[in-house]
Image (cartoon, rainbow, N blue to C red; front, side):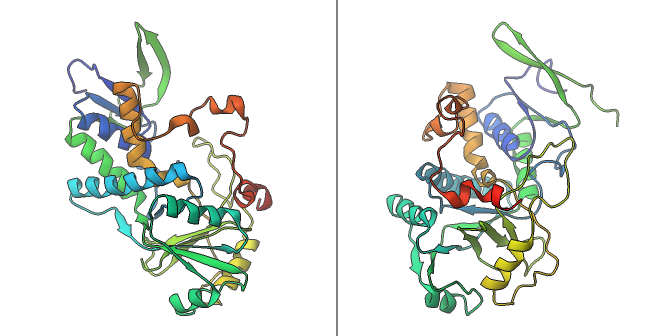
Length: 328
């Protein structure tokens, strides 16, 4: 193993998008960095694989917006350094009932953070999308240019390659069995080395709470998913459907006027955190090297937030909070 007698300034456990981005940030700052993955690199057992993830700034929570805008810049910088693209720009379209608190908060957040947007009524939505999207009379839409699609597997590979170029050591099939405390340092015991668009991004709040994004692995198709699912153990991952497809099929038929085939969809979903990976990597590197994170309010992400509220961050949006229980 490289790096002077196997001593490292930082060891990152887990080589998904967050770990790979963090390893890149640490190596970029001159740290002797080791990145460990218990499975093969670019495996399919977590949530960092595939060909399409969304990036958007239309969050009702203000504290996400700055993170997204910084991530957009960092995605551009990283792919420029790598010499190929993993982020593809697309407009973001959100739609919901007119009294929906979540989308109303999105508008407030856009105004507060100076993100240009347009509010569209039913007729304007139909005109804007050439009749492809049909929303009820009492719905409205919000359209912004801040959005796009990220190619996940390619993005993970990109950060790993950039970290390697900066001197990081990457090892897969190495599971951390135990963490030992010694003289203020933390060391992990490891196993021995093995011998050998397109369409625009869309989101619909309300019930069901639906996401859609251009499916880059299948050009011309749209990936549509219900916000929900079940806990996932990477060692015992179930591959069946996490939610019923009935409400999703009904939603597709109603919104796309029969123009989208809902006959045999594959239900898929991943966390909204993927788009934030560059910022998360930067913040973690800041914490490791300086003990503080600049530009991000960490109170929303600290474990001890559960001490005051067992539910974590308080969400005042029923369509988000109840989406899992309503669509099992």
